[in-house]
Length: 156
Image (cartoon, rainbow, N blue to C red; front, side):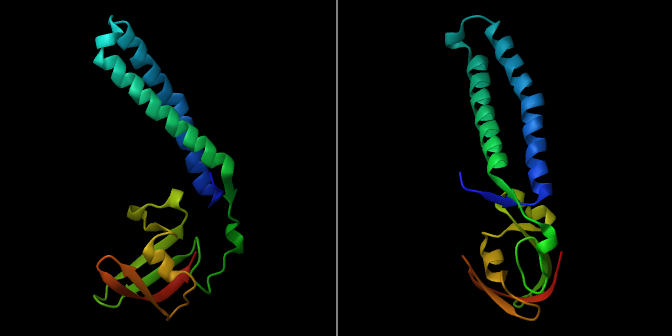
């Protein structure tokens, strides 16, 4: 797995999720397997099969989280400048076709959450905004065509 750059907050979220999966979900799945096993013949026990499948998915997710945590490199937020759009900056933009304003924070893929206005730096909008300064226009290719965003404000 490649190195993943993230904030300290993003790394803590991964650690919290891992702790939940290992401390809460793993014991729940183990209990479900034991309960299904106690019901008799395993060759025709759909509950047992479902619980074992869930255990496989859970263990895969745990392994992936552990790998991400080990490979994570923390970004020093104090070194981020706001003279141009870059990772971790918040940028307020205006869609030039409809006049709508939005604020996005450019984050790593692991921290992206569109409901919180956090978009991954790998998305078309973020790629179009990277390196832009206040007043500049970003042309972003999307499946529906090309959108133009005017950069109104950059901050942390």
